[in-house]
Image (cartoon, rainbow, N blue to C red; front, side, top):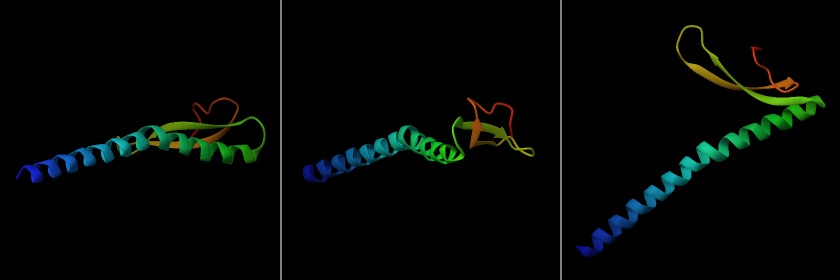
Length: 80
């Protein structure tokens, strides 16, 4: 019975470790990858283009959508 308990504990530890790695990837690494991909696209437009993340609200609901855009200059505030 002790062996089964030990294996269960290791399974729980492994699941928690995998969940933690997934959370780090999703919250830290994935946004950097997204920005890098968009910035590479903006660089093809020429000098002075920047990747900007904009949050817009859909008309018929309270849903908010994050989208990346290439903008000339520092930011695209107010551009849809």
